Image (cartoon, rainbow, N blue to C red; front, side, top):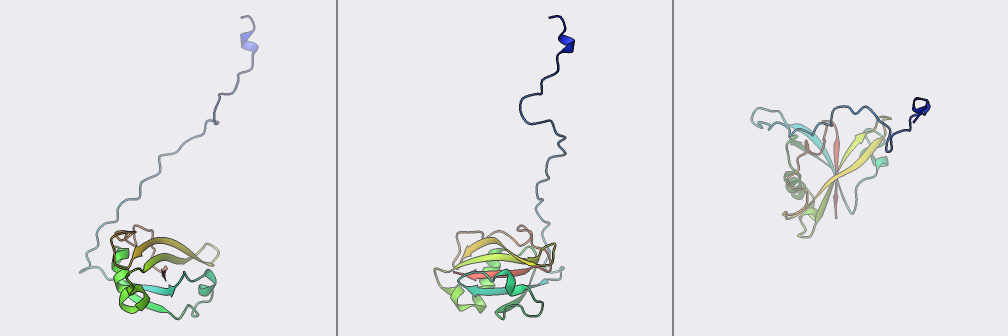
Length: 150
């Protein structure tokens, strides 16, 4: 075993050692909102039968789609609550077999609007993402909501 000090060290098998920071934090459950004391936010909702609006529909400010409904609500509103509100104004959403797909519409870092699907519900409940709130889904004040009625 003479000359072992002269042997180059072999790299360890597997991925290279990297500094791992702290583990990612779990998304904390938002604090409950006291709806008696907290002012609601204005949510601009755009409904469409058959599919979501496309990004280009929101490209020019002031020329958003005409099928807009404005709802005052809170960030803890669930998709079930929003489904029931949409059913009040959009007749196709009242169909027993209607499926509602929800998407947030917001500007990306370049200022172009993005439509990101976030959940689905069914007109008469029981399945889907009924219990998820806007806050749970990452909603930020100023985002629009696109609702596709299928």
